[in-house]
Image (cartoon, rainbow, N blue to C red):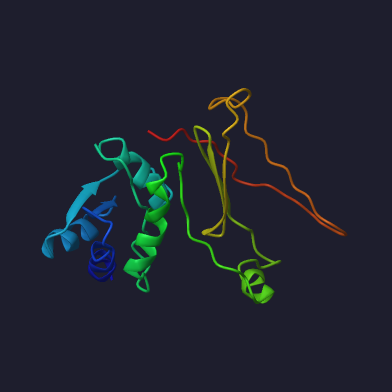
Length: 176
């Protein structure tokens, strides 16, 4: 699958290079076998986005597109659509979105009898909110007067009716 996703990402007109970031020697060998570029990362990372952040610090480039290796239906044009807004120098981050026409589609991401995996990634003034692997929102603090890339991160839970919120395995991690 990694060869297929790599090929699809490389087919995007806006992409100059595709680099696979992995902590798995088997994936690295597979990528090398088809001639792809690979970077080994720490095994301590919990996600591909964490691995991307590690590799990003070693790159000299203007823009990085995060594509997960398990996206076989990736359309190269989607990458081009995500990159297009960067023609405007004021754009700091871009993500694709789609309208949820069927609320059951979103509801299928949550199972009331199971734990919901929530990630909040804060990088400077950019905050990403991810639920069960699905990017839900991105918020960029552009407040020049009061914005601060350092400080406290709080979690707020809101709900209507009989809502029960419990937290387990909460951790903070500074990305390299």
